[in-house]
Structures are given as structure tokens and as C-alpha cells.
Figure 1: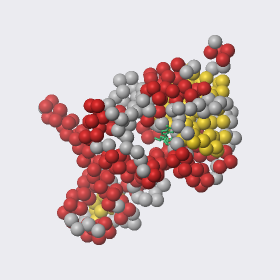
Figure 2: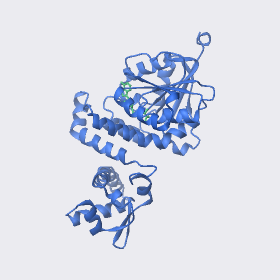
Figure 3: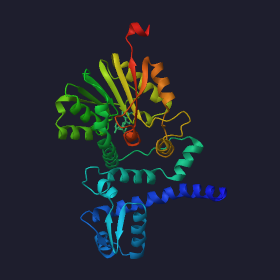
Figure 4: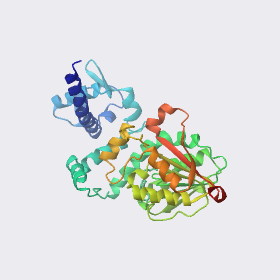
Length: 339
Ligand SMILES: C[S@@+](CC[C@H](N)C(=O)[O-])C[C@H]1O[C@@H](n2cnc3c(N)ncnc32)[C@H](O)[C@@H]1O
């Protein structure tokens, strides 16, 4: 292909990203996937189900969803694709719709203009979430955690651990998976009170209340006590600027027993912060005060708080890392070995 055409194609492809997103967000908001949950429907039936008058626009939406691989068209009927059936039909085991809704709300709250202003002026821009928005946030986190919690709980060997601190525990899925995989473990969930409300319900639902403790507080301005074999921090340091993230890791390392392990799970970026691309996209567009940190940065924090043997933990299936995330662990040496 002519290099100019290839260059234009590349830019067009980037621009199409927003249109893909809008198509999915609108379909989800209208309830397209739920409407097709029971099987294929004609355009007329979908219009009736979604109370839509504009048939021409609905037809464009449905054909676009077919192009995106979310529905399939068979003659005059549309049906959910396998991907939609697995992720977007309410009630399915891998339901991801709460995350789609949450991201839609985030796009609305963090407008392009707002992000530009943040870039120009550096002013923090994070609107306070209402209680309902916080619940939606937790529901979104739950969608992701459901896919990875068991995998992560099983890829860490916690057979000799007795106390684990889950910092920024969110809706509690990781804590629950740790309890279920390692029945001798006591897990302390530390988070803001509004997140612990959801965690408490989930823990009760999973029947692991006797293995858990809930502690409310802010992870950036406190110490977390001591005596933990493991401190686990999942997708939380990215919310904070480097100074606050560093303070959090210092407090986390102080809470470990000698020989204990700090595990950080996040989008862990390469040295040039270009990969994984999703990490840099979310970092720029969503985490206005925080960032997706690089492996070098995390290594350097861990080293500076006295951890050693810093290593990436391999998942049993490394190809799942894009969804499950990356894990880095560092071990606290005994005082004698630290010198
Ligand atoms: C992206 S969620 C991750 C939740 C969970 N660890 C997971 O991986 O699903 C970030 C969590 O950090 C918590 N958080 C944010 N600011 C915090 C703070 N200052 N202190 C403690 N937790 C905080 C939020 O309440 C939320 O539960």
C-alpha cells in the first residue's frame, strides 16, 4: 500500500475507536443484548422490545454491531453472537455489562475537554462519585475480578501463609478467592468505607466471614499494623501520584513480617510506557491523578522499602495476562540479612 494511504489508514483506525465504543455503549444502554437473550428477532421485533421509533437508525446500529462481532444477522433476523452471549447478556456467568456501563459513565464524566484542561493546567479532575455511582464502580470492578480472582489466588503459593492484607480490596472478590483457595488464611480487607459495604455483602454471600476482617481507612495516610505474611495490592496504586503510591508501598512493606511478600497487581508497563497499550490508554484517559507505573518504577519502590528477590509472577497461562493482569512480588528480608 502507498505509505501515505497506510498512514491515513492508521489514523482512521485510531479515530474509529471512539465510534466502536459509542456503538457498544448505546447498544448496551438501549438493552439490545438483553432483548436478544432468548434468541433471534427481526428489526421490527427489536424496535418493539426497545421502544424505538427510528427504524433506519436502529437498522444502522444492528448492522454495525454485526460488523463488530457482537450480533449475527441471519436473513431478516438478528441474534447475539457467542461473544455477546458470554459477556453482555444479563445473568450470564461472565457478565461484563456493569463494566461497560461504568466506562460509559466515566467517558461522560471525564470529557475530552476536561482531560485537555487537566493536561494544560494540571488541576486534578475527579468528580466525587455519588453513592449510586460508587455502587456502579464496585459492580464494574466485580466484573473484572470474577474473571481473574481464582486464577490469581491459585498462582500464588500461600500454603504457609496465615495472614494476608488486601489493600484497596474493592468488592472483595480477591479476598474471597484467597479464602476459598487457602482455608487456613485470615484475610484483612482494607479500603474506604463505601467500598467495604459492597465487600461485606459479597463476603457474607460467599460464606467466608470467619476468615475475613474488614478495616476502613485511607491507604495513603496510615500504617496497617504488622505481622502479615502477604500484602496484596490489586489495581490500586495506579490511582495515586508517585509520591502517594510510594508512601503506600512503604506502609505495606512495614506491615509485612520478616520473610513476608508484597504482591502488586496492575497494568505493569514496559520501560517506555507504551505496552500494554490498554494501560497507557486508561492511564491517560481515566486515572488523571495516578498512572500506570512501569516495572522499573515498581522495582525501585520495592527496593527502596527494603524488599528483595523482586520478580514477576508467571500465570499458569501467560496468554491470559492481558485480562488477568501482571503481578510483581518482592520479599522482605530478615533484619539481619538486610544488614
Ligand atoms: C480499581 S479498584 C480495585 C479493587 C480491587 N483491588 C480489584 O482489583 O478489583 C481500587 C480500589 O482502591 C480503593 N481506594 C481508592 N482510594 C483509596 C484510599 N485512599 N484508601 C484505600 N483504598 C482506596 C477503592 O475504594 C477501590 O476499591
